[in-house]
Image 1 (spheres, rainbow, N blue to C red):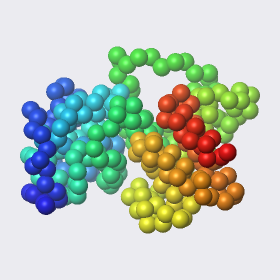
Image 2 (cartoon, rainbow, N blue to C red):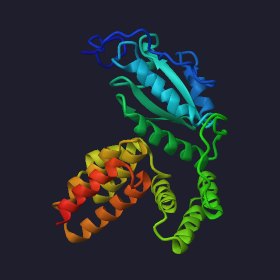
Image 3 (cartoon, rainbow, N blue to C red):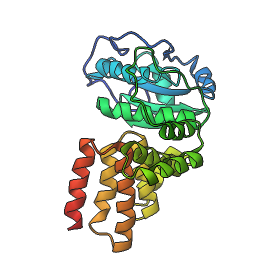
Image 4 (tube, one colour):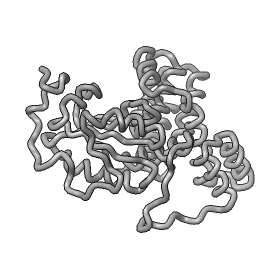
Length: 292
């Protein structure tokens, strides 16, 4: 059943006090209306924007807005938050083809791509924002300084600082070589492994339309290349378990050559997420069971 949004009926969702959360809006946060949507799209040529569509009727929605603000605020000046109140702006929600709330979308260089629907955990939000910040740097968009009250990052060796700077500036080839050179003399270094794996992920997805890539994976479940790319896109969207599951679900019935490719990609994604993440541990255990 559809309602004024032109999509689905949200009337069963619990009413909260506000769709805008209880925390203070960020300095450059935008409240989107029908009149200024096009201007926001145009300005996304310069600044990457996270578009969050929500409603006062979403259970837990206000708290989730606060969590999103906290995650975006760590990348002030790089990621701009734009909020759409679907109750107040139903035509905007309909134009964005929202199917469920809350819905997060990436607005970049005049294009809008879906990121995720529903609330996600804080660690997943942080992962998504880090990937978006890297994407903004890669595409030469506005990149701001970290907030002055943010905790100081651990000092990296100069070689890794250089490699990370190359990655942030979008020089993927240079960053890859710098990370690999460091790994030759410091094998197994977790930061270098993560940087190299992240660079490979960005290289594999830099020319990919997110929506088309997801559609291709859904339409061709037996196409290995489509599924590997789908796993990459899952991870970019913060769906870590989905990325790992997409690969592991195909591993048991695969032939030896296909298993090698699946395992190689899975290990690469493990390095992106980090060995200390509990989701990596769970996926490693599942992989071990499937291998033996």
